[in-house]
Image 1: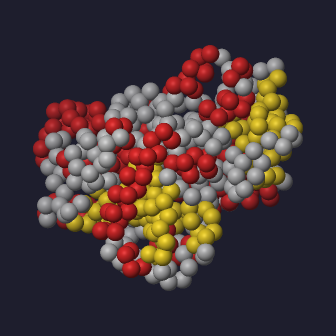
Image 2 (image 1 turned 180 degrees about the vertical axis):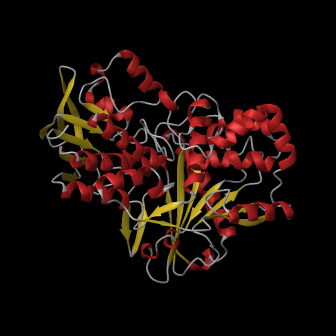
Image 3 (image 1 turned 90 degrees about the horizontal axis):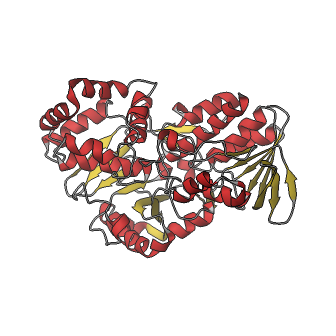
Length: 485
């Protein structure tokens, strides 16, 4: 594939990694980014001495997943930091447990016992095991347990088409047990569990547990695309920010290049879009796609959103012992995310809270801190009013969890779905992209190839597996090997 010209649309983790990989393989690569800075939703911006991520992110295994595979090909990549314990589990009204990223880690096991002994988390292990045996059978339960240690991920294919709720709800009557897995599905897939694919969820859990590391990029989210774009430019590629694509040129069912908003025609043998499936179809012209492909695009569902309240502090956040905190509401496990669909104000919220400077001290000025409080929200821009109620409650809960915020906060900033959509250029404020839901899982997810020759897709919409940023990286890897043959 060496020697061909390629235009990459978008510089998120998928687009930036694809650009670097294609340049490494000998392509002449031009990357175009509509924003004045690279990264899209996965970017970081300077702000009065802080480095602020533009979104709410999890980065999964870092160098132990697809990012590491890309780095080994390129010989470079972002630097990662891990922390143990990785996060604090705040059980609303009960207590806090400090956990590692794997339940098999001794620290996690010890705190599971602590939570049980103190009555904070009643998982009802013996009744749950008995119900699991009745429902799955001894061989099924053993196969499920073994699959978590099998690098071939057999559970990934076996459990496609099964919802997370469908798998877990028969296994236990413990609200704490069921609430834990519902919250995990929301945290890692930005979906309520009746939509989330168990096949995708099993892959995320098993791969994370094997890696036993929860990682964050040193320098913030934007360090990921920045590292790959540096590799691209070293290989002779070109990066243009503030350059939006007006349309993809299609002639004779083949992509021939792009036209920018300024009217510049950039010819190319290959066009790789990180703009999202729906946007790519519009850019290339719906008339150039077969009807069945358009039906799939029009019927595709996006993930939900994670919106945030940012607290900029004049001092350090002393009550955070780990870089992340998960606030687990004491709600009915089957109803805890109903507000995403019924527009009813929630009574309590599941929150993902992080202090980025605990991962990397350079992200905040000396002696200061920034606390990001993320909450699930509906991704549709028509539901933006619901987001205000979610942010109000998230801010209220944060003030109760961290009393020092009242005195130390210099500024509060709220990030809702319109801001996320403005960054990505997508139809909504979704956190990840096309939802990893039943019907859009496994082989049912869009391929990197499209019906138009020479037009390819990367990003979390297509072909990848894992937590959102890892899906995007995995899609770039898959495109690289697809074109390499």
